[in-house]
Amino acid sequence: MKLNVCPGCLSEGFETYCVKCTKLLFDGKKISHILNFTRPEFNKIKMDSKARLSISGIQIKHSLRIIENELKLTERGGQFILKPIPSGQFTNLYQVPANEHLTMQIANQVYNIKTAVNGIIFFLDDETAYITRRFDVTGEDKRLLQEDFAQITGRTEETHGKNYKYDFSYEEIANLIKKYVSAYPIEIEKYFRVVLFNYLFSNGDSHLKNFSLFRNQKYGDYLLTPFYDLLNTSLHVPNETGMALELFKDEFQTEAFKAGSKYTRPDFVEFAKRLEIKEIRYNRILDEITGKTKKVEELISRSFLNDNMKSEYLKSYQNRLGRLRF
Image 1 (tube, one colour):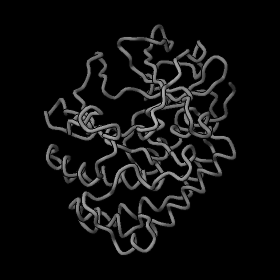
Image 2: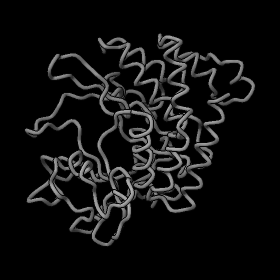
Image 3: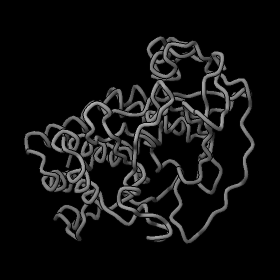
Image 4: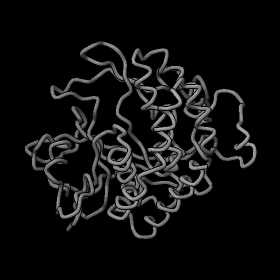
């Protein structure tokens, strides 16, 4: 697979990972962007029509580690997660790895959202896959204490039904952050920023398990983990709802929402107020999120999406951008 952009950061003029991405992803080890094996075989996934289906839920993930300067499949001591093209009933699934990679890169590079380190990688037969470095594994192969918000709330399929990840609200997650995170004023702005980002980039599958806390080893307090599983699901799930969860814990609706049945800037202003973010701060975040259009367009153009999906991705972004500028 001959490249002209870094399969990590999408910088132009590279035929493999650039020096910076090699350091971030592989601790400076020169790892090829082509794996030495083809796509692993895996069983077909059973679909249950009673459950709300999600792309992440149907995607088989594989564990990798570096052995003698090569990435190898492993059952123990995994340092990376490999996500091949998923199987299922959604559309354009062969573009999922490129979609997730692009969305994660936009979040990190354009909006300063701390994400799991990630890249595009290819199987031996040139099939595309997404790779991400595990942030819960330290250099000594020890695991950080991490819990997602489904675990924190004690919600499982057995206790709360098949849609347990979705029967919640973003405001309720914020209330839990306030309860468990001593640095709430700092962390809640990070949370607000990523909720906004997910709306702007049509991530309709940002559910309870896609937000996590980990224990700070140095001070013993809890912080939000880097963000993960960010992608534009509208490319694969046409006519999907606006967000995975309700924004508010009650049935409150702004006048703008009543008029158009879509979230717009006034909804996120109300959301920010409920999160106790100061007006000067939430207006600055809103302005930052709705700015920087040129950089977003540049990354879309350099991404591994095909031309049609680049166009659809851009249209989706521009549509939501218009709502948030209202």
